[in-house]
Each structure stands twice: as C-alpha cells, then as structure tokens.
Length: 172
Image (tube, rainbow, N blue to C red; front, side):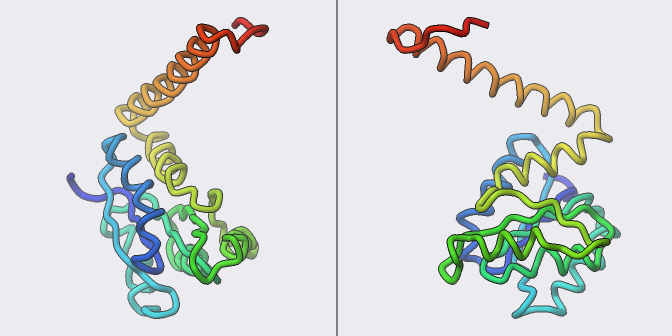
C-alpha cells in the first residue's frame, strides 16, 4: 500500500483481534492505512506525538480502539484536527464494554469522537472510507460496489429462504 490515509491505533496489542476488522475493511476498499499500538496511559508522549503529527504525515482519519477506561480516542481527538472514530473494545478489564462505550460517547462539547458499537471495528473501517470517499470519486465508486454486493447477498438469502419454503409475503 502507498502512503497511509487512515491511522488505526489501539491501546494494547490485545485489542488487535477486534481492530484488525477495520484494517481488513480498508484493505478490501483499497484504502492505505497504518496500524500500531498507542496507549493513552502507558505511552502518553507517544500518543501526543502521534496525534499532533498525524495530519502532516498525510493521514485523513484516525480510528482509535480502546477498552476499559478508553481514554485514547478522546485524548487523540483533543490533540488533532482530523476526524477520530472511536471503537469501544470489550476487554478483559471491561464491564461488558459499556465502560469503554460511555468513555468514548460522553465527550465534552468541542471534542467530538464518532463512536462505533462495542467491538465495531468493521464499521469504523467503513466509516473512515466513507469520510475519505466523500472527496475521492474512485473510492466512492468502490464503496458503491461494496454496498451493492451487500444488497445482492441479502437478496440471495431471501431467495434461499423462498426455495426452502420459509419466506413468504413481502415480494419487492
């Protein structure tokens, strides 16, 4: 891949099992990205450096996944002018991910973070592509193909249900 347009960061390498879904979506949509660990609590100076230099390095969007207290997305958003997409991660020290969700959702006015569902890294990758695609016609076309494939898959499933005698009623 060429120069990264999306930065995927996470508070710990244990978050990779969730966050790789964002990377996989970006790969599918041919959006260059970088991925690394940046901990708000264990490497705060690395976090400040990453967030403050992200735009000058060419990034357009940052996806930040974190579990537990989940300060990473909000702290990064407080430093950069780039859009930040937060992914609450249900981690080993988490309260079913709700503590992470609330930590990311409840940002003060002036420091927004677009928050995905708990473990919603796939949608974070898609959202990052949508943000960039709003200004990139080629990427926008790839997103349209992606959405069309999803639609076709649902209709294939409806056809299978009909063949098996389960689907009846709505016919459009």
